[in-house]
Image 1 (tube, rainbow, N blue to C red):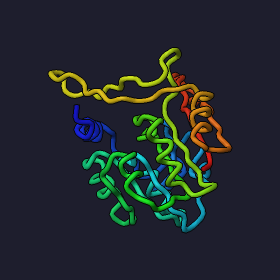
Image 2 (cartoon, rainbow, N blue to C red):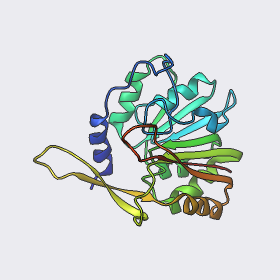
Image 3 (cartoon, rainbow, N blue to C red):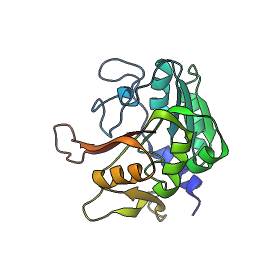
Length: 220
């Protein structure tokens, strides 16, 4: 299965981004699947002038907000459709965008980053045995690596199938994702040399939905 084609298909299914958030801001950072909920870019501790990498940047909303903080925003995504959408969404923001698979991009360069993040992105859909050492190699000492994703279904851990729907006449596309409980993520990161690891589930906002958001943060 061509994963690039799968993510191109996914790109077409995402709803249009809101022009402003609840606070009236045109850029914002959101770790969760719920609007105006949870922490923001402060998780990354990004100083002005920092190099910041988004793994699985999608249409670039979080990365555009990083740019407003004075950082240099670098985004990687497997889908050219996503890259083109990000360019169209943010014509006045200088985003450095690359079409590449995350571990390949990390392996092919030497530049160090002050922060690396992934919001429901490549950190969820890449084997941590390959991704974690690659991230740590490119993270400056003391730099922050943080990612968010849905918590695992109880009893369903490790490599799982994730389905991207198509038309009613076509079978869904299947990509792999990696699901672990917070303590297990913390152990994996510590095993690859990360420090100050925290892993927690942010509860869903009040309402009918009950699924929270897993947020993991560590330092290189």
